[in-house]
Image (cartoon, rainbow, N blue to C red; front, side, top):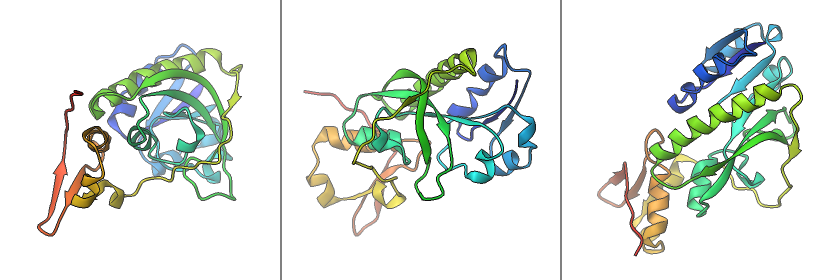
Length: 223
């Protein structure tokens, strides 16, 4: 098989070697940008594997090659961007990491508009600092891609149950709190808010008339 692997964050790039070494892979090329992918003769490759991508692929790519990604959420309400941050803020501890299939829906402007079909999945624990979670995403992505390629093209696809709830993708302004915001939160909620915005993501902050205090890393202990 000839495969394109697309990742831009380091935790995703670290998965590339595992994919490249899979016994079914004859040729594997790693891309970090959309321009690199679009510059390839996509029709000459069997699969496009994305890892940690936070943007819609678009019909110009998915019409030319079968595209597969990994998504770190069990519920469909987190399918539209920033799933790690939204789940942590919502107090979710245990989730899923899944292989899913991209399609292009020209009637939707939501990120990661896919056909809600997923195949292989593993458990995902969202506790700890962001560095702990990203290490886990690297490890589980390696497992998922190995399992997927082992079974390909006979993977068993399942459908996400439809929900009425949609959690909209977070924006940079959502990461800045006021003193009044803090007064409405308990210490565990503060911990969840700031830990999900640790590096490499734009850090959360507390803003007042003097300026903005950014929180790079947090620690919490329950009573």
